[in-house]
Amino acid sequence: MGRIRIVLVDDNPGFLQVLTSLLAGEFEIVATAADGTSALEVIRECKPELIVLDLGIPGLNGIEVTREIVKSPESDPPVVICSVETDLQVVEAARQAGAMAYVFKIRVERDLILAVKSALLGKPFVSPGPA
Image (cartoon, rainbow, N blue to C red):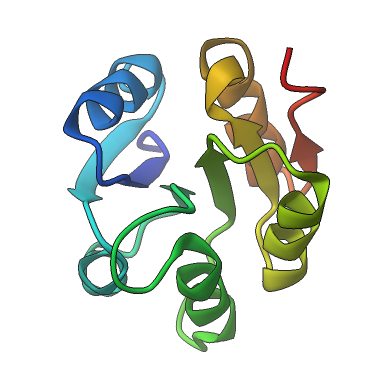
């Protein structure tokens, strides 16, 4: 069995590189995207097993993209939101949209792998406090 296939979505090229370096050792990064519309195209084409998604991307934002992914009949990969936004109302909105996990960017190095593994098991994950 091959490695889990992941699509990364963030409009900051430097942060995409951080995500790639954190995940590439254990997972296969099949594509990246920098905005909501291209994210949905890449997800349809690549059929990943998980998506790591920024909230503040241009075009369709992360919550809108998550809603589209969840209502797609052909695939419903878990979504891990990775955002600078730490407001609990925003975290809850992302979960209501269908995100399985939410990682604060300030904690990405500590929490991302755990969040991805939890999401793959169908277990919700939220970074503990932004500290």
